[in-house]
Amino acid sequence: MPEKPRGFDKLARASLDAGAQRRRPVGVRARQSAIESIPAASPPKRNRVIPLFLLFLLFLLLSSPFFSFLPLLPKTPNTRRLWFRQSIESGQFRTSVTMSLNGRPLNLLALRYTQLMFRNLLDLASRPECFSVLTSKRLWTDPHVAKQMLRFHLDAKSALASRPADQIDQAVAWLDAQVSLKGRRVTDLGCGPGLYAERFHDYGAAVIGLDWSATSLEYAKNKASATDRQITYLLADYTADRLPSGSDLIALIYCDFCALSPQQRRMLLQRIREALAPGGRLAMDVLAMPAFEQFEETAQIEHRLMDGFWSASDYVGAKKTFKYVREHVTLERYLIVERDRQWSVYNWLQYFSPSSLTQELTAAGFEIERLSRGFSDHQPTAADELIMLLARAA
Ligand SMILES: C[S@@+](CC[C@H](N)C(=O)[O-])C[C@H]1O[C@@H](n2cnc3c(N)ncnc32)[C@H](O)[C@@H]1O
Image (cartoon, rainbow, N blue to C red; front, side):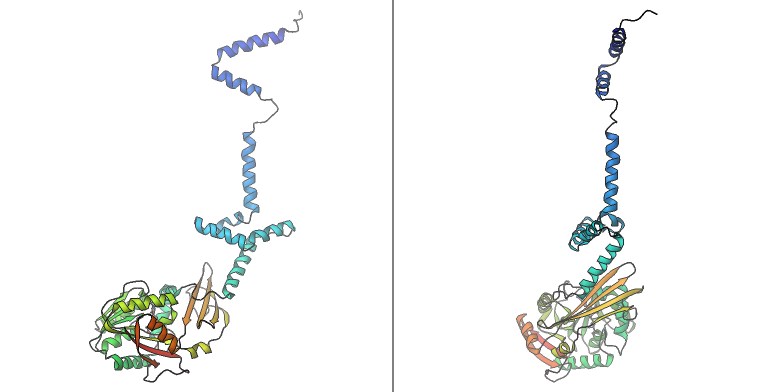
């Protein structure tokens, strides 16, 4: 075969390609030339970027303390932000990095639990600011705890939620001797299951009982209708909702005033003053200084603390008490840890001397009519644990 001239192949391919190019649309030609300009050896870049990015994400998920607890992460953006912040503040991030750098095995889940437990126990052991956390609603309205409270209210011998029955009789008789209940419009704030409201009614008063515990009120209403007593019961929060107006007497019994913060007490006194009819009175009892002196700081942790009082399911309850010597305040703090949740209760109590009580009531626009030692005709002494107060709106 005759030898082709050396440039022939090149020439023939060039003319063939030129023909093919002419037959293709312009766009395809442009793309084609772009593809041809990529050197054949280099792989397409897009294919590498995605797996690398996925690998990077996987690395983050596995290595970062933030992402390794995804199932445990709080659900809303706000709580998640808070969680991240706490995670940095509590040193979780630093600890896990240090552990990795030191080559110690890093079980992030165990670390997270340990740190949570540390934070909870540290929190439980630390003295919070006076009245900084208010949880009393839960104490009276949690369905299980409210049932336990009702049980104690109705136990005529127990003093946990109400006075024993004979002392209630004595208290109402004393009040009647002071204000003559017959024909009075009486509002019983924090009436519970109606132990005082019924007696006020039986002394001839027109009674409204107000409480935020639906459990207690249901009992009170049933009892009133079963015993044919005309008593109005209202489900309401006396620190927030409107109080019935035009009362001759407003009662706040069993030291409920002591459980309120100074600000709540100021506001409640103002609302009571507004709800009283002209010349109307406030009757309440408060804890006095001898009870404060006797209070001691303690710590306790028990499986089913208080025999199942706090939950129907299995739990561990911790109780830590604090005494605020300057403020005359005590705190019983409970941490209830169940298998799937944990929660706290803060029981604050303010203690009064006759002079601090007088000062607070006078500042709120009341005139003290009577301060007595419990429900008796005696002046309170330094040894009394309870002060009974009768005051008029000035
Ligand atoms: C210690 S018990 C006393 C009940 C009743 N006064 C007695 O001595 O039998 C306190 C009651 O006040 C109610 N209580 C506490 N704070 C309240 C609030 N802010 N509004 C309405 N009721 C409240 C509770 O639900 C509970 O029934």
